[in-house]
Image: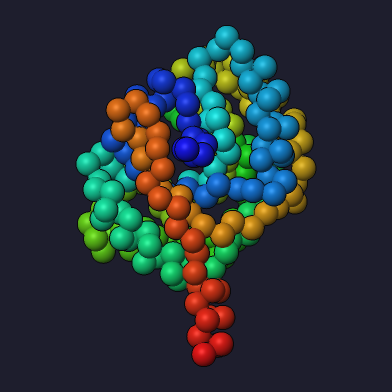
Length: 211
């Protein structure tokens, strides 16, 4: 029985992402509820407009180009995860990425740990010559959960959507701890899991100390 819950289910978005792979964090605890407190009214506000919506909240760490071999990516992520301790995700605010992207997001607080984790994953991928599709420099990366993507929304409607979303309250300070990363694979108009990789730095420290 397949219990995998996909992040993306809209056919047009699945087609656009076909061939790509991503490494993401799936937040638990109270974060999904905080996410939906904002996304549900945003969906209503944008009803009938040209917009797409993730089915499940997630924090993307890196995207990889079409043609990236899953076994090579799995090797990189598995080795990298051995150096990563469980990560703290905390809601900061609702914000937006401007045109041409036009993406509404729940912003996650950028901590030293998150920044180091993202940077080390990119460095590990570069050492194996794996091409990234997330080209924003790590220093400028904004950690977030995407609420809605609407690049085709007219300027006035986009501004109105920003003002509406930023007036919603996801409850700043809501947080959870993530103990693993997920590899997400898009192929043939569908999403599937490429593997769930636990963070092991703390676990390995405990194991060594117990010997």
